[in-house]
Length: 480
Ligand code: TXE
Image (cartoon, protein in one colour):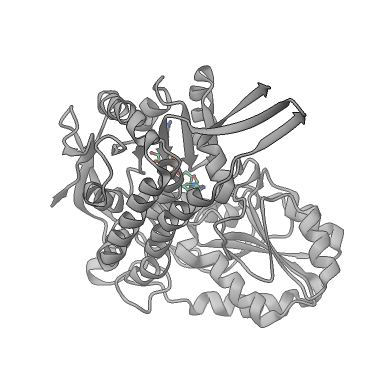
């Protein structure tokens, strides 16, 4: 059984307490590795190492930092198959998805920010003939990075890459449910050329290791992706220290299907957007709002498509969906569906836990589930399920569609399907969400601002937004 270790000051180390947690493999429910149950003393050691390493890393030429990140990207690429298999085993997602999406994107994150810092510009402002200002950007210090379990390496590196590129040193705490690819990454950091202490990874629970990182006085910045309720706790813990924080949280994302939409494209993309990665992506569509005149035809085709999606062994190349991340998460998803059923909502397909044969019988499988919802009031239309569950709701007018779309506490992403330019642009303006996709979904350019409104988050990541978050501006004014 693999024993995962912390990575502190360039060395692979045991947790000081000697305590470990079980790491469960979602596809068959077995404990297949163990990870450190780190506590405040491990975090303090990692922060001290990062603090020591900061002045030298910050002083490096940006070309040197970029070259190290490029090398790290190349090293991951050379082991893409190993990383993809590990991600699938740890998270439950199909291996082919990790090969196509998660690991290539992790590589791209390092390449993108290695390039971005070489093109970063700083501002100068001339006030009068004899007075001018120039603005410096400096790394913040030790960055605390807390990442979730749904896209483990993809989202960890989305934080690591800009934090390191801009000259910060890092203490990262990956999700305790999916530590494996972060552990594989620790094995490449020294070879890539990262000096000891620049990038530290501490494994453990949110309540112990995560909280110790958030409350450590020498960590001036926290970047968090995860649940909305966790963010509220982290915000309160970080506030007394005036920490810089970025929160990328959940969503209850609508897909709006207008009657003039290209139906083939809308059905195909909506199936992907509802069920890709078992619905465990913050950007997944979980509420489909469909113009009444095409509701029946759309619903029939969508439900047929959902039933046809292959749920199976994540190792098999034809599995579109694998297992949910944990037993606890599957129970949470099943609970939402059970309550919807009790409230009298009609389940059009799915809705029962799936038991696969043989070795997989203890795995955490849940099928694509489609629920008919008359309006925005039921719990299933308000709370994030974060699983393969989507509701279908008809709308009659444009105003009703927008009202339904905005009638949740969240505001992360929306996908609008129409052939009418005016409808598309009006809806893009009227919907409260950080990401609007028109006739597409999860089409990502790493330069654009990424983040949510309302309970979906605070701040934006991506491109210059990340470069700005991981740096502090200092304006210098000169009188000649
Ligand atoms: O996430 P948590 P959970 C949503 C989704 C899911 C819900 C809860 O709806 O059902 O959140 O999931 C660390 N101080 N998303 O409970 O707890 C934790 O160890 C510091 C949306 O699994 O938010 C992990 O590393 N850290 C989402 C990270 O926070 C703490 C992705 C996320 O875990 C902490 C995941 C604390 N007090 C879940 N408590 C997205 N936006 O993509 C936990 N953590």
